[in-house]
Image 1 (spheres, one colour):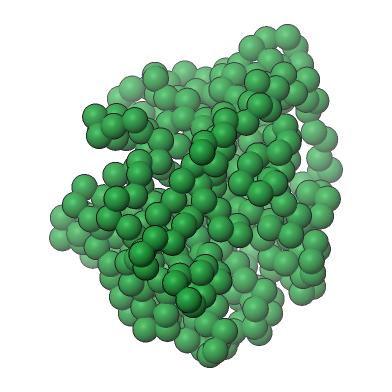
Image 2: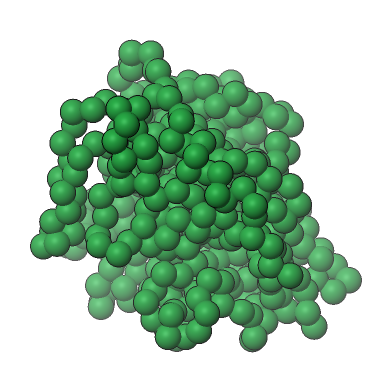
Length: 403
């Protein structure tokens, strides 16, 4: 049975009262380089309309060297890579599908055994797709009759306000809705050897905000669209969801079972927060006037979020500042800002620009003794004059943190 949380009406009230966070003078971002990159993906007819977006890391507990990186490629489906960045499997979308984000759920009970699965948002069809993961690749185990995530019918699916970002914990998937402030929690369930899901809770983040000067502000967007969430990560030990509302802020929301259990709190706002802006329908971009200074350091969009754990509650939270191609690091326990880094061009691998998705693991892997960070690169060095995207692999040691 679906439960719509009772805290939704309180979100805006709390947000309006929030003060402007203060930050110490920023140091230049730490410049690091990637060690490996995956093959270029091309978002054109010849390339199968493949556009890299969001990665996830699967740890093979039996043989760490056979661990995998799974990446979404939108109309190009899913791509599966080994630790050297080599593609070992390409999975096409169902007809009309468009794969947006992916996360890994471990120990899911399927029949009499426990398996690891990749949970993928299909924004083209407004559904989740579930894939069993093995060292040799992925197998689709999605029930044929899985329900729509947010749409009431197929006509509404055509409007493409569909499932977008995803983050998993326990047996649940938190999914965001495109062009909307809505978040939903869905419980995954086994049925006859396949996997389906049902809604357990929903929450709407605010779409407008009262500023400290008394004015009301809404982020600039195409008419009819609300400020959406894409990048998300769940800190399962702390029972916390971090949700990146692209043109607004990084939020912290408590979870309890399959429900949202607290009023969302802002970790950091985007730099554009509270600033007047004008939408240009020709360029589909917003021109911002920076004059109020109510925002934070992140340059919109705030995107991919991931957690590097160093203990049960200790470690680091990383988010993408897509607008200026930087990444911000926070203390996992306190959310205190710690540092900033950027991935620059190296001798063999180019840097990372306008990154969407991110995934990290603290598990020692071949070539990555303190862990692996995988980042989407939205502007991979073009091949043959074609714009391309891919994923970059970064040795955690290059960030300079203890582990």
